[in-house]
Image (cartoon, rainbow, N blue to C red; front, top):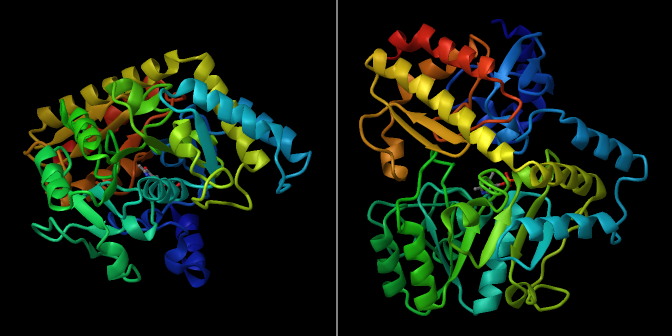
Amino acid sequence: MIYRRSSALFAEAQRYIPGGVNSPVRAFKAVGGNPVFVKEAKGAYLYDEDGNRLIDYIASWGPLILGHAYAPVIDAVIEKAKKGTSFGMPTEIETQLAKLAVSMVPNIDKIRFVNSGTEACMSAVRLARGFTGKDKIIKFAGCYHGHSDSFLIQAGSGAVTFGSPNSPGVTQGTAKDTLLAVYNNLESVKALATANKGEIAAIIIEPVAGNMGCIIPEENFIKGLRDLCDQEDILLIFDEVMTGFRLAKGGAQEVLGVDADIVTFGKVIGGGLPVGAFAAREGIMGHLAPDGPVYQAGTLSGNPLAMSAGLAMLTELNNNPEVFRSLADKTKYLGKGMAQVLTDNHIPFQMNRFGSMISIHFTEEPVVDFESSAKGNNAAFKKYFHGMLNQGIYLPPSAFESYFLNDALSYKDLDETIAALANIAKDLH
Ligand SMILES: *Cc1c(COP(=O)(O)O)cnc(C)c1O
């Protein structure tokens, strides 16, 4: 496939936008080459500026769980736009979406809408700190909670006390309040809780991780976190920006059978428009302004266009919960087909799959945390990524991302994807 016009557009974009993109992973730095500029999309397909048709496995990084330009969502947005795009005053549709979300998700009474997953996680941590009167948080290496300062902390080797900033611009003062634990390693969390007794406001986690590839929580890991939080008066925050309204109506809380104290949302809840949200029981949400002292606000929060997209999306999912099974079945089918091809070609790989999240890692070792995920063979991944792209299959341009299937994908699309892998598998050694 030829990507001539995309390349020209990228060159022009780089003159005016840092790196030519408004979010770094779009720039293909991890895989090399130039990004594809998309013109439009419908269902499971992207149509790029060169006229290529691509089968899409990122779905805008998750939101478009029912496929691109899904008619009920598009119609809702168009109708809403005709009546004005923003008021800075309350609107009924905010309550409609809040009511529906609260009815679908276990263990929450109230929800506050923001504009991104980043804002949701940042606000959830502030709320946890305000509620508990404690400063420190525990996060897990390899989990992504958006780009606010407290979360941009990487593990130094053996770091169990103070985090060190891994992005310039994050101060030591901020970094020292973020403690790093190892995913799927309850002991690493307990050690931090013991060393920082009485100082930890919250543990924040992706209950099924999707930002170091897909990582499945081991049996009893999440339950162990719940018990630890109960014993130590720590709030458990589930970052369900990726898993929420994707794994099930009630997200990971429902699927794993574990209650979180605060849950954050993004991606699917906005149906493709900028929406994030955080939610909890009344006892915690009551601490938020204007009811309580913890401040949080937004000029465009609860924006009517964004709410109308979210409401249309969640209404579809609420009325057709079979879609979660359908998606999981398709993901399983794809995974099985791809695994067979790789096995037949003697390519070492790990495949992690949970519901409609899936990732392939070119490594012999099980991928259970950031360290094992980072051991994947990136040279093989690059060949795989570009080999698939050349055949019109658009995968996430980084080995650290889960694929997001959308329900517009047909079994024919999946077969085409498996066949594309078969064409290039022998080159992946
Ligand atoms: C995408 C993501 C975020 C950040 O959401 P944005 O809308 O990009 O700010 C936070 N947490 C998780 C788990 C995510 O996948």
